[in-house]
Image (cartoon, rainbow, N blue to C red; front, side, top):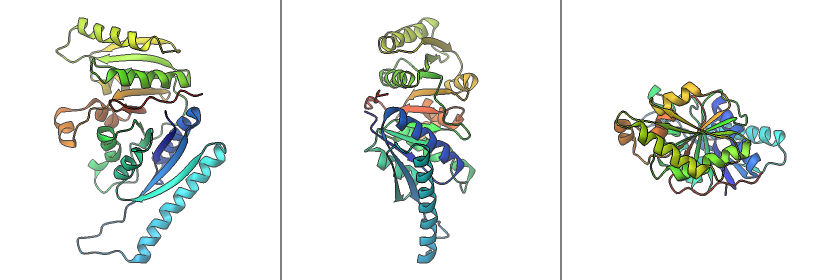
Amino acid sequence: MFDRIVVGFDGSPTSRCAVDWAAQEARVRRASLEIAAALEEPWAGPDSVLPTAATRSIHAISRADLETELDRIAAHDPSLEVAGVTGQGSPAHLLRTRGRRADLIVVGTLGRPPAMPHELGATARALARRATAPVLVVPPHVRAVPPARVFATVDGSSRDADVLDAATREADLFGAALVLLHCSDSDETLEEATRILDAAKCVARPSARASLSTCHETQPLAAALAEGADHRTLAVVGQHRSTALTSTLFGSSAVDLVRAAALPVLVIPHGSKPSNSRA
């Protein structure tokens, strides 16, 4: 059941887009929404200690931003159950912790300008690799509008059942077309690809209320979705539970999509709880 949704917020325009997407999901599922802000104290050197007044000022600004965001969402939809929470530490740690008691985590791919360029999207990538709840990753400048197409990405693994369940329910909730997408690697035959898509169709068809089609690509998944994406497209992909090192060395569909950030991506962990289909 999607009864509780947690979204990360840091005051940036991208995090506001993520909050809008989270509110849209909460609204259609009649779920509660929690807006979480991590309060990270700046680091100025190994021996430096921020004055207490300066620390309070940093925290006050973050809480003020959070209160403003809560007011914005409440004004847009007074019936939505929404609350704010703050916590110490990194955004990834806070969202992963709050996500253990939630049914969906929503995060933007970029936040406040980081100290180093390679940190861009680090929170989203970390959650895509390790979160135990489904993670909706929202790229910058993508407005929260009901998706018209939902891509369910299948690879013939045990992850497919969870991906198909989540994608089918998402398509049904928004009245979107469901597209089963498989991207072959260089060693896979056409017969094997057809078998994977046929099996996925058999699983999805009984529960899908929206239109259902299949798509076979021979290019990498991130490239295939970027090519066919528009502002009303959502991708659903299975989580590869990898470390940062193995993801860098061997790649991960979920992390690759988060890096590409061409469209919203819903990352489904294996064995995730079924979503709430209440309309």
